[in-house]
Length: 398
Image (cartoon, rainbow, N blue to C red):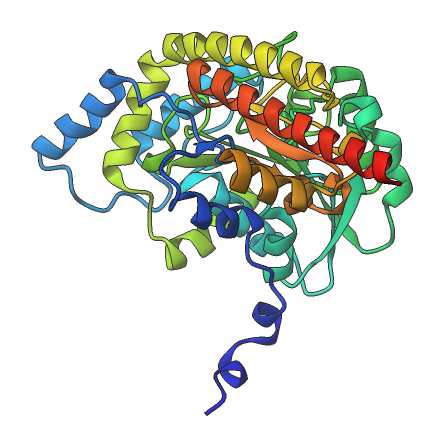
Protein backbone atom coordinates (compact mmCIF):
# COMPACT_ATOMS: atom_id res chain seq x y z
CA UNK A 1 0.00 0.00 0.00
CA UNK A 2 1.40 3.39 -1.01
CA UNK A 3 -0.18 6.07 1.23
CA UNK A 4 0.43 8.80 -1.38
CA UNK A 5 -1.90 7.00 -3.78
CA UNK A 6 -4.77 7.83 -1.44
CA UNK A 7 -4.07 11.55 -1.05
CA UNK A 8 -5.83 13.92 -3.45
CA UNK A 9 -3.45 15.43 -5.99
CA UNK A 10 -4.28 19.04 -5.11
CA UNK A 11 -3.56 18.27 -1.43
CA UNK A 12 -0.19 16.65 -2.19
CA UNK A 13 0.96 19.94 -3.67
CA UNK A 14 -0.48 22.07 -0.87
CA UNK A 15 2.35 23.52 1.27
CA UNK A 16 2.31 23.33 5.04
CA UNK A 17 2.08 26.65 6.82
CA UNK A 18 5.56 28.04 7.34
CA UNK A 19 4.35 29.67 10.55
CA UNK A 20 3.10 26.48 12.21
CA UNK A 21 6.18 24.41 11.36
CA UNK A 22 8.46 27.12 12.68
CA UNK A 23 6.66 27.50 15.96
CA UNK A 24 6.59 23.81 16.67
CA UNK A 25 10.28 24.41 17.43
CA UNK A 26 9.51 27.46 19.60
CA UNK A 27 7.14 25.45 21.79
CA UNK A 28 10.10 23.37 22.98
CA UNK A 29 12.14 26.44 24.01
CA UNK A 30 10.74 27.77 27.31
CA UNK A 31 13.07 30.81 27.40
CA UNK A 32 12.22 31.95 23.91
CA UNK A 33 10.34 35.19 23.30
CA UNK A 34 7.87 34.75 20.48
CA UNK A 35 7.05 37.66 18.21
CA UNK A 36 5.57 35.29 15.72
CA UNK A 37 2.01 34.34 16.46
CA UNK A 38 -0.65 36.92 15.63
CA UNK A 39 -2.53 36.60 18.89
CA UNK A 40 -3.27 39.32 21.44
CA UNK A 41 -1.49 38.88 24.75
CA UNK A 42 -4.52 40.43 26.45
CA UNK A 43 -6.93 38.05 28.11
CA UNK A 44 -10.47 38.35 26.77
CA UNK A 45 -12.18 41.04 28.91
CA UNK A 46 -13.96 39.58 31.92
CA UNK A 47 -17.46 40.71 31.01
CA UNK A 48 -17.16 38.85 27.69
CA UNK A 49 -15.88 35.70 29.39
CA UNK A 50 -18.60 36.03 32.01
CA UNK A 51 -21.30 36.13 29.34
CA UNK A 52 -20.08 32.80 28.01
CA UNK A 53 -19.86 31.30 31.52
CA UNK A 54 -23.34 32.53 32.41
CA UNK A 55 -24.74 31.05 29.20
CA UNK A 56 -23.20 27.69 30.10
CA UNK A 57 -24.62 27.86 33.62
CA UNK A 58 -28.06 28.51 32.11
CA UNK A 59 -27.71 25.35 30.07
CA UNK A 60 -27.23 26.97 26.68
CA UNK A 61 -25.47 24.04 25.05
CA UNK A 62 -27.55 23.48 21.92
CA UNK A 63 -27.06 24.07 18.23
CA UNK A 64 -28.16 27.45 16.93
CA UNK A 65 -29.70 28.47 13.64
CA UNK A 66 -27.21 27.75 10.85
CA UNK A 67 -26.89 31.48 10.25
CA UNK A 68 -26.16 32.13 13.94
CA UNK A 69 -28.25 33.45 16.83
CA UNK A 70 -30.63 36.09 15.54
CA UNK A 71 -29.82 38.25 18.57
CA UNK A 72 -26.14 38.18 17.55
CA UNK A 73 -26.94 38.96 13.93
CA UNK A 74 -28.92 42.02 15.06
CA UNK A 75 -25.95 43.22 17.11
CA UNK A 76 -23.63 42.62 14.14
CA UNK A 77 -25.94 44.63 11.90
CA UNK A 78 -25.90 47.54 14.33
CA UNK A 79 -22.13 47.40 14.86
CA UNK A 80 -21.31 47.17 11.15
CA UNK A 81 -23.61 50.07 10.38
CA UNK A 82 -21.92 52.30 12.98
CA UNK A 83 -18.32 51.26 12.27
CA UNK A 84 -18.19 50.31 8.57
CA UNK A 85 -21.16 52.25 7.16
CA UNK A 86 -23.61 49.97 5.31
CA UNK A 87 -26.73 48.48 6.84
CA UNK A 88 -27.35 44.74 6.53
CA UNK A 89 -30.54 42.78 7.09
CA UNK A 90 -29.83 40.41 10.02
CA UNK A 91 -32.36 37.96 8.60
CA UNK A 92 -30.78 37.40 5.18
CA UNK A 93 -27.50 39.31 4.78
CA UNK A 94 -25.42 38.14 7.76
CA UNK A 95 -23.83 34.75 8.47
CA UNK A 96 -22.05 33.90 11.73
CA UNK A 97 -18.99 31.74 11.06
CA UNK A 98 -16.26 29.93 12.95
CA UNK A 99 -13.82 32.79 12.60
CA UNK A 100 -12.89 34.70 9.46
CA UNK A 101 -10.87 31.71 8.26
CA UNK A 102 -14.02 29.68 7.70
CA UNK A 103 -15.73 32.67 6.11
CA UNK A 104 -12.92 33.03 3.55
CA UNK A 105 -13.08 29.33 2.74
CA UNK A 106 -16.82 29.15 2.17
CA UNK A 107 -16.94 32.47 0.30
CA UNK A 108 -14.38 31.21 -2.21
CA UNK A 109 -16.09 27.83 -2.53
CA UNK A 110 -19.47 29.49 -3.02
CA UNK A 111 -18.24 31.65 -5.92
CA UNK A 112 -15.43 29.89 -7.78
CA UNK A 113 -15.79 27.37 -10.55
CA UNK A 114 -12.68 25.34 -11.46
CA UNK A 115 -10.19 27.62 -13.20
CA UNK A 116 -11.71 30.93 -12.07
CA UNK A 117 -9.08 33.45 -11.02
CA UNK A 118 -8.63 35.47 -7.84
CA UNK A 119 -6.64 38.69 -7.59
CA UNK A 120 -5.11 39.32 -4.17
CA UNK A 121 -2.29 41.44 -2.78
CA UNK A 122 0.92 40.00 -1.38
CA UNK A 123 2.55 39.64 1.16
CA UNK A 124 -0.69 38.35 2.63
CA UNK A 125 -2.21 36.08 5.24
CA UNK A 126 -0.91 32.55 4.76
CA UNK A 127 -4.27 30.94 3.97
CA UNK A 128 -5.35 33.03 0.97
CA UNK A 129 -3.55 31.25 -1.88
CA UNK A 130 -4.10 27.74 -0.40
CA UNK A 131 -7.80 28.51 0.11
CA UNK A 132 -8.11 29.52 -3.53
CA UNK A 133 -6.38 26.30 -4.58
CA UNK A 134 -8.68 24.22 -2.38
CA UNK A 135 -11.62 25.80 -4.20
CA UNK A 136 -9.98 24.82 -7.53
CA UNK A 137 -9.35 28.44 -8.43
CA UNK A 138 -6.19 30.15 -9.66
CA UNK A 139 -4.54 32.67 -7.34
CA UNK A 140 -2.97 35.74 -8.98
CA UNK A 141 -0.76 37.66 -6.53
CA UNK A 142 -0.29 41.41 -6.84
CA UNK A 143 2.82 42.62 -5.07
CA UNK A 144 2.90 45.53 -2.64
CA UNK A 145 6.24 47.18 -1.97
CA UNK A 146 8.12 48.62 1.04
CA UNK A 147 8.67 51.94 -0.74
CA UNK A 148 4.91 52.48 -0.49
CA UNK A 149 4.69 51.01 3.04
CA UNK A 150 3.00 47.95 1.49
CA UNK A 151 -0.17 50.00 1.01
CA UNK A 152 -2.85 49.43 -1.61
CA UNK A 153 -1.79 50.10 -5.21
CA UNK A 154 -4.86 50.11 -7.49
CA UNK A 155 -2.75 50.46 -10.64
CA UNK A 156 -0.96 47.21 -9.85
CA UNK A 157 -4.30 45.40 -9.68
CA UNK A 158 -5.38 46.93 -12.97
CA UNK A 159 -2.21 45.73 -14.66
CA UNK A 160 -2.48 42.23 -13.15
CA UNK A 161 -6.06 41.64 -14.30
CA UNK A 162 -6.56 39.02 -16.98
CA UNK A 163 -9.58 37.27 -18.50
CA UNK A 164 -11.15 34.80 -16.11
CA UNK A 165 -10.71 36.92 -12.97
CA UNK A 166 -13.81 36.63 -10.82
CA UNK A 167 -12.81 37.74 -7.30
CA UNK A 168 -10.81 40.58 -5.79
CA UNK A 169 -9.58 39.51 -2.33
CA UNK A 170 -8.49 42.31 0.02
CA UNK A 171 -7.12 42.53 3.55
CA UNK A 172 -6.65 46.04 4.94
CA UNK A 173 -5.13 46.63 7.43
CA UNK A 174 -2.89 43.84 6.24
CA UNK A 175 -1.34 40.82 7.92
CA UNK A 176 1.73 40.71 7.82
CA UNK A 177 2.75 44.24 6.78
CA UNK A 178 0.33 46.57 8.54
CA UNK A 179 -0.38 48.18 5.17
CA UNK A 180 -3.59 50.18 4.81
CA UNK A 181 -5.80 51.58 2.07
CA UNK A 182 -6.91 55.22 1.95
CA UNK A 183 -10.29 56.26 0.58
CA UNK A 184 -8.94 57.71 -2.65
CA UNK A 185 -7.20 54.46 -3.61
CA UNK A 186 -10.19 52.39 -2.57
CA UNK A 187 -12.42 54.53 -4.79
CA UNK A 188 -10.20 53.80 -7.78
CA UNK A 189 -10.15 50.10 -6.92
CA UNK A 190 -13.94 50.09 -6.55
CA UNK A 191 -14.34 51.54 -10.05
CA UNK A 192 -11.99 48.85 -11.34
CA UNK A 193 -14.06 46.13 -9.63
CA UNK A 194 -17.26 47.46 -11.19
CA UNK A 195 -15.68 47.82 -14.63
CA UNK A 196 -14.38 44.24 -14.56
CA UNK A 197 -17.51 42.89 -12.83
CA UNK A 198 -15.55 41.41 -9.92
CA UNK A 199 -16.89 40.12 -6.62
CA UNK A 200 -14.91 41.66 -3.75
CA UNK A 201 -14.10 39.70 -0.60
CA UNK A 202 -12.82 42.19 1.98
CA UNK A 203 -11.21 40.71 5.11
CA UNK A 204 -11.22 43.56 7.63
CA UNK A 205 -10.40 41.63 10.79
CA UNK A 206 -7.88 44.32 11.88
CA UNK A 207 -10.19 47.27 11.19
CA UNK A 208 -10.35 48.41 14.84
CA UNK A 209 -6.54 48.38 14.99
CA UNK A 210 -6.07 51.37 12.68
CA UNK A 211 -3.68 53.87 14.26
CA UNK A 212 -3.61 56.88 11.94
CA UNK A 213 -6.89 58.27 10.69
CA UNK A 214 -10.10 56.27 10.46
CA UNK A 215 -10.58 52.88 8.87
CA UNK A 216 -12.24 53.09 5.45
CA UNK A 217 -14.08 50.08 4.07
CA UNK A 218 -14.52 49.48 0.35
CA UNK A 219 -18.04 48.19 1.03
CA UNK A 220 -19.16 51.72 1.95
CA UNK A 221 -18.30 53.11 -1.47
CA UNK A 222 -20.89 53.60 -4.25
CA UNK A 223 -21.80 50.43 -6.11
CA UNK A 224 -19.86 48.14 -3.79
CA UNK A 225 -22.33 46.78 -1.24
CA UNK A 226 -24.08 44.69 -3.89
CA UNK A 227 -20.84 43.04 -5.01
CA UNK A 228 -18.85 42.80 -1.75
CA UNK A 229 -18.63 40.25 1.06
CA UNK A 230 -17.39 41.98 4.22
CA UNK A 231 -15.58 39.62 6.59
CA UNK A 232 -14.93 40.48 10.20
CA UNK A 233 -14.59 38.82 13.58
CA UNK A 234 -13.63 39.03 17.21
CA UNK A 235 -10.20 37.41 17.45
CA UNK A 236 -7.95 40.43 16.99
CA UNK A 237 -9.63 43.64 18.15
CA UNK A 238 -11.66 42.00 20.92
CA UNK A 239 -8.89 39.53 21.97
CA UNK A 240 -11.16 36.49 21.46
CA UNK A 241 -8.94 34.18 19.40
CA UNK A 242 -9.96 30.98 21.17
CA UNK A 243 -13.68 31.67 20.85
CA UNK A 244 -13.47 31.14 17.08
CA UNK A 245 -16.33 33.35 15.99
CA UNK A 246 -16.60 35.71 13.04
CA UNK A 247 -19.13 36.82 10.48
CA UNK A 248 -19.80 37.62 6.85
CA UNK A 249 -22.04 40.39 5.56
CA UNK A 250 -23.12 40.59 1.95
CA UNK A 251 -25.92 40.41 -0.61
CA UNK A 252 -28.55 37.86 0.37
CA UNK A 253 -27.82 35.66 -2.67
CA UNK A 254 -24.15 35.37 -1.75
CA UNK A 255 -24.84 34.79 1.95
CA UNK A 256 -27.35 32.09 1.01
CA UNK A 257 -24.74 30.34 -1.15
CA UNK A 258 -22.19 30.49 1.67
CA UNK A 259 -24.76 29.24 4.17
CA UNK A 260 -25.35 26.11 2.08
CA UNK A 261 -21.71 25.11 2.53
CA UNK A 262 -21.61 26.22 6.16
CA UNK A 263 -24.67 24.15 7.12
CA UNK A 264 -23.12 20.95 5.82
CA UNK A 265 -19.48 21.34 6.87
CA UNK A 266 -19.83 23.30 10.12
CA UNK A 267 -23.52 23.41 11.16
CA UNK A 268 -23.09 26.52 13.28
CA UNK A 269 -20.62 28.47 15.38
CA UNK A 270 -20.50 27.36 19.05
CA UNK A 271 -23.36 28.86 21.01
CA UNK A 272 -21.16 29.89 23.96
CA UNK A 273 -18.90 31.82 21.60
CA UNK A 274 -21.93 33.50 20.04
CA UNK A 275 -23.18 34.57 23.47
CA UNK A 276 -19.77 36.04 24.23
CA UNK A 277 -19.80 37.87 20.90
CA UNK A 278 -23.12 39.51 21.76
CA UNK A 279 -21.61 40.92 24.94
CA UNK A 280 -18.48 42.05 23.05
CA UNK A 281 -20.53 44.08 20.59
CA UNK A 282 -22.80 45.55 23.25
CA UNK A 283 -20.21 46.50 25.84
CA UNK A 284 -16.71 45.67 24.60
CA UNK A 285 -15.67 48.58 22.42
CA UNK A 286 -14.08 50.55 25.30
CA UNK A 287 -11.79 47.56 25.94
CA UNK A 288 -10.88 47.47 22.25
CA UNK A 289 -9.83 51.12 22.35
CA UNK A 290 -7.71 50.57 25.47
CA UNK A 291 -5.94 47.62 23.84
CA UNK A 292 -5.39 49.64 20.68
CA UNK A 293 -3.63 52.36 22.67
CA UNK A 294 -1.25 49.76 24.07
CA UNK A 295 -0.57 48.29 20.64
CA UNK A 296 0.21 51.74 19.28
CA UNK A 297 2.70 52.36 22.09
CA UNK A 298 4.36 49.01 21.39
CA UNK A 299 4.36 49.65 17.64
CA UNK A 300 6.16 52.96 18.04
CA UNK A 301 8.78 51.35 20.26
CA UNK A 302 9.58 48.28 18.18
CA UNK A 303 9.67 50.13 14.85
CA UNK A 304 12.03 52.71 16.34
CA UNK A 305 14.29 49.95 17.68
CA UNK A 306 14.34 48.07 14.37
CA UNK A 307 15.44 51.20 12.54
CA UNK A 308 18.04 51.97 15.19
CA UNK A 309 19.66 48.56 14.72
CA UNK A 310 19.70 48.96 10.94
CA UNK A 311 16.72 46.80 10.05
CA UNK A 312 14.76 49.23 7.89
CA UNK A 313 11.11 49.20 8.91
CA UNK A 314 8.17 51.33 7.78
CA UNK A 315 5.59 52.42 10.33
CA UNK A 316 2.59 50.05 10.02
CA UNK A 317 -0.62 52.06 10.06
CA UNK A 318 -2.75 49.11 11.18
CA UNK A 319 -2.78 45.54 12.62
CA UNK A 320 -0.19 44.50 15.23
CA UNK A 321 2.73 43.50 13.00
CA UNK A 322 6.01 45.13 12.01
CA UNK A 323 7.72 43.99 8.81
CA UNK A 324 11.42 44.94 8.95
CA UNK A 325 13.95 44.24 6.21
CA UNK A 326 17.00 42.05 6.89
CA UNK A 327 18.67 42.73 3.54
CA UNK A 328 21.28 45.00 5.14
CA UNK A 329 22.74 41.95 6.90
CA UNK A 330 23.49 40.13 3.67
CA UNK A 331 21.41 37.09 4.63
CA UNK A 332 18.02 35.78 3.63
CA UNK A 333 14.96 35.93 5.86
CA UNK A 334 14.81 32.18 6.59
CA UNK A 335 18.44 32.00 7.78
CA UNK A 336 17.88 35.14 9.83
CA UNK A 337 14.90 33.61 11.63
CA UNK A 338 16.56 30.27 12.33
CA UNK A 339 19.79 31.81 13.59
CA UNK A 340 17.99 34.41 15.69
CA UNK A 341 15.95 31.68 17.34
CA UNK A 342 18.94 29.42 17.89
CA UNK A 343 21.38 32.08 19.09
CA UNK A 344 19.17 34.58 20.94
CA UNK A 345 15.90 32.66 21.43
CA UNK A 346 13.69 35.23 19.75
CA UNK A 347 11.11 33.99 17.24
CA UNK A 348 9.97 35.99 14.22
CA UNK A 349 8.50 34.69 10.96
CA UNK A 350 10.20 34.69 7.54
CA UNK A 351 8.49 37.11 5.18
CA UNK A 352 8.29 34.46 2.47
CA UNK A 353 5.81 32.55 4.66
CA UNK A 354 3.40 35.20 3.35
CA UNK A 355 4.36 34.80 -0.29
CA UNK A 356 7.41 35.49 -2.49
CA UNK A 357 6.86 39.26 -2.23
CA UNK A 358 7.85 38.99 1.45
CA UNK A 359 11.42 38.12 0.50
CA UNK A 360 14.08 39.92 2.50
CA UNK A 361 11.71 40.72 5.39
CA UNK A 362 10.49 39.14 8.62
CA UNK A 363 7.23 39.57 10.48
CA UNK A 364 7.40 40.56 14.13
CA UNK A 365 4.20 40.76 16.11
CA UNK A 366 3.97 43.42 18.79
CA UNK A 367 0.95 41.75 20.36
CA UNK A 368 3.09 40.74 23.31
CA UNK A 369 3.89 42.60 26.51
CA UNK A 370 5.96 45.79 26.41
CA UNK A 371 8.57 44.27 28.75
CA UNK A 372 9.01 41.27 26.48
CA UNK A 373 9.31 43.57 23.47
CA UNK A 374 12.10 45.48 25.21
CA UNK A 375 13.96 42.25 25.99
CA UNK A 376 13.38 40.88 22.48
CA UNK A 377 14.76 44.09 20.95
CA UNK A 378 17.89 43.86 23.09
CA UNK A 379 18.45 40.26 22.04
CA UNK A 380 17.88 41.08 18.39
CA UNK A 381 20.32 43.98 18.56
CA UNK A 382 22.98 41.67 20.00
CA UNK A 383 22.30 39.25 17.14
CA UNK A 384 22.57 41.99 14.50
CA UNK A 385 25.84 43.18 16.03
CA UNK A 386 27.21 39.64 15.93
CA UNK A 387 26.34 39.35 12.23
CA UNK A 388 28.10 42.64 11.50
CA UNK A 389 31.14 41.41 13.48
CA UNK A 390 31.23 38.21 11.40
CA UNK A 391 31.13 40.27 8.21
CA UNK A 392 33.91 42.54 9.44
CA UNK A 393 36.11 39.55 10.34
CA UNK A 394 35.59 38.01 6.91
CA UNK A 395 36.44 41.32 5.25
CA UNK A 396 39.61 41.64 7.37
CA UNK A 397 40.77 38.16 6.37
CA UNK A 398 40.14 38.85 2.69
